[in-house]
Image 1 (tube, rainbow, N blue to C red):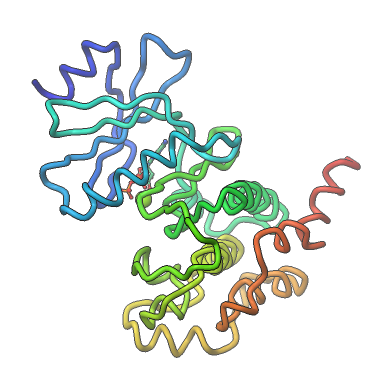
Image 2 (cartoon, rainbow, N blue to C red):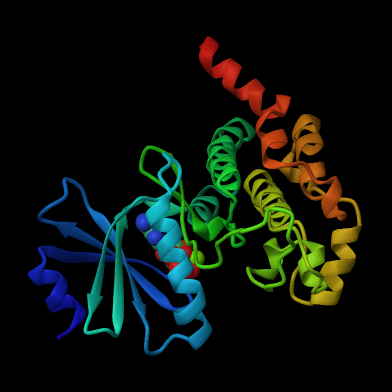
Length: 276
Ligand SMILES: Nc1ncnc2c1ncn2[C@@H]1O[C@H](COP(=O)(O)OP(=O)(O)O)[C@@H](O)[C@H]1O
Ligand SMILES: [Mg+2]
């Protein structure tokens, strides 16, 4: 039986394509049983690589079941189709952050601060539970129509057993990956997420990537140098001061997510919002 027929039988009607990942398709559907539209991520267990199906996908599902946070995408149900395909039914967002940046070129600093503070709150929640994401990038940050952040794609996420233990799995996208991972060294996965957050914020405020990732050796050389900002982006000094430690070459000098959350740059945005 096809995915369409099974889902139709369960009251879902596909209305649009939303995105495509490495081993999945994401579609927008109207459900009979929920109030609003849902997104359905369809994973083909047969066509996907073995380590993805046996290791990463089960981790993604365990984590999606455990998490409950305003800024993390909510999973509603899982549907198996003939043991071959898996449909992850979740709340639908309007777009991802990369699509938004393509539309607007770059996001004004106040708005970036607001969105970034939502991401920090979600990652702080995950790190407190010893869950690391390890694939934070603009495509995996969803935005609702009300500009609420929903972090998604827990395909490389992992629940760390011993928080002092280093990870060895090379995962993620080079452009958002810290130097220690590029170099194949055992790494602190929480500091990996901090680096990726730094890249995301840089992309939001400048509309461009901080490092060219076409060649890994060159990428590693660029990561060692101080950050360069495009002149026309007009990024303010306090924002640069905030971003710099997130992209520290040496992972032990990068702040923890709790320190990021408490940083005056993020707090400033909040107090202004309360006053207005
Ligand atoms: N819940 C959702 N709402 C709206 N768009 C989504 C949703 N989930 C995923 N997408 C879109 O589909 C893309 C691929 O989904 P993702 O879960 O990241 O798959 P993959 O693990 O294959 O990268 C995302 O980058 C995003 O553009
Ligand atoms: Mg993805």
